[in-house]
Length: 334
Image (cartoon, rainbow, N blue to C red; front, side, top):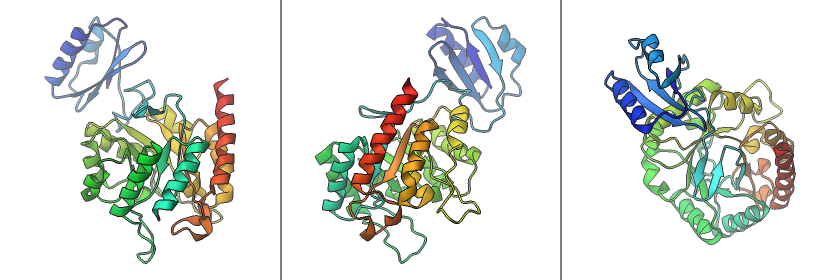
């Protein structure tokens, strides 16, 4: 349930109403928009008299919400959430590139790629230190050493870091990582999501291999219910019966998620298709569909990459893709 307050409602009145709701066992979520303040009520609202609420002079309207996700719901928070990492903003009309290798391999590799993608317009550097692999015999990442290399690249380029966490026991290693990525295989690792909810660190939450948008939003709800509202959603393709591509990129998720939630939505065209040649058209399509950003894998030597070389762009290819995406973004602003 949400109570929409009339414009001009004073803070003391809002506080008094919140205390009244809490006295009835409800959690209160307050969202201040451009014109209205909305109070979201979480808990058993069956005993709340809607007619009584509507009779209160500062309340404009009362609406019921049947969706199980509350904090992530746009009805609770009509304005777009903007996730801030220093001076960098994602969402609310702020489009960002997140680029870098699938996995960190060496100091020269990560620093060289970081400099190239930054020059092309990427604001954030991605790089895997811990890698979830289908086969236990594949390269699993440099782990703690990989984190150190990412932080060194950050120190030299000034780029904030995005890296994937595999286990909540690794959280101390991520103290200086700017955005913690929760991969597709961990989207419903609820213990991990709860721990991330206790932090204020931004979280990039990827959609699972065969999960619905509702399930993605419920996973975001786990993080937000813990008090962390800095969540960025990521569509990275889902598993279908199609075999020509690694996954099927669900571009319809972009407008659908923007309707359902206030959280930013970024697209990962690299994992979605599994082929470098498809990254460019899917990146352009995602930008045209209204994505808040792109996460693209870039490697200086894809043929010899230790992880996912087939889907990685070269720095020169990323230069071209970034330029074309920027042109689309400019058109959309007109």
